[in-house]
Amino acid sequence: MDDIQALIFDVFGTIVDWETSVVAELKAAGERHGSASDTDWKAFAREWREGYYATTKRIAHGGAGPSSVDAVHRELLDAMLDTPESKWSAVRPFWDEATRQDLTLSWHRLHAWPDSIPGLQSLKQHVIVAALSNGNVRLLVDMAKFANIPWDVIFSAELFNTFKPNVDVYLSTCKHLSLPPSSCAMVAAHAWDLEGAAKAGLKTIYIPRPTEDQGISKDIKAKKDGGRFDLVLSSVEELATLFAESKVGRAQN
Image 1 (tube, one colour):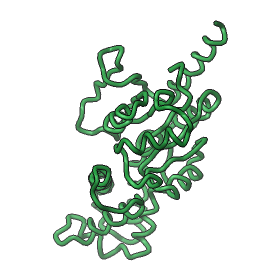
Image 2 (cartoon, helix red, strand yellow; image 1 turned 90 degrees about the vertical axis):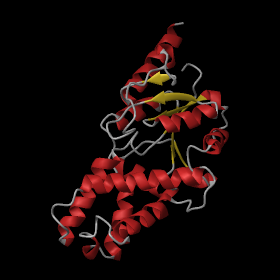
Image 3 (tube, helix red, strand yellow; image 1 turned 30 degrees about the horizontal axis):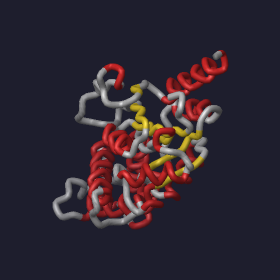
Image 4 (cartoon, one colour; image 1 turned 180 degrees about the vertical axis):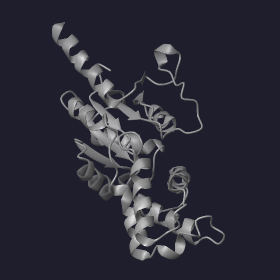
C-alpha cells in the first residue's frame, strides 16, 4: 500500500449499514400508517435491495434504465407494492404517494457502521478518501451530511452514465483524481465490486460486513494467502492503523 495515494470506498454496505437503517424506517412507516403488524420488514428491505442489484447490474452491462438510484428505488418500490398477487399486498392500501416518496428517500438517511467515521477521519491524514457509489449525487451528499461521513470527494456512477462494475466507472474516477489506477485502491464489502476495480488496474481491499455478500463464502483471503484481493481486513479502523504504521515506518527509514 506504500504507493497508494487515494482510497476509493464503496458506500452502501461498506461504510453504512443500509439494512438496519432501512428496516427501521419501514417499520416506523408501517406503525404510522397502520400497516400489517406482522410484516417482515427485513425481508421487504432485502427484496428491495436485490431488485437494486439486478437493475444496476443490467444497466452496467449495457441495458436500458434510469441513471439515478433514486429512480431505481422508486420504480422497485412501486413494483413491489402494485404488482398483482404481490406478497406485500397487505401494505399497499396504507402507503400513499407521500409515504412512498419518503421511503424512497430513506436511502439518503443511512447510519454508518461504528468503525467507519473514525477510520475515515484517520485515513484523511495520509491519503485521499473518496466515495464511489452507484448512488446518485444528491443521495450521497445527503447521506454524508446525515451520517457525518468525512469524504474528501464524492463520485457517483450517475456522473458516468452507467453503474459499477462497469470498468469505465473506476477508470473515470481515477482520471478525475489525476492518478493512475495503480495509485488507487478500491475498498468494498462486495467481491463483485472489487473484481470490477481490479480489471481497471486498482488495488483491492475487502472489508466483510454481516449484511453483504450473502450466499458466498466469507472465507476470502488476501493474495499473500492465496486469495484474490490485495488486503482483507476487519474494519476501516484497521485499514487506518495500517496506513498510520506505514507512515511511521517510512519516517524512521
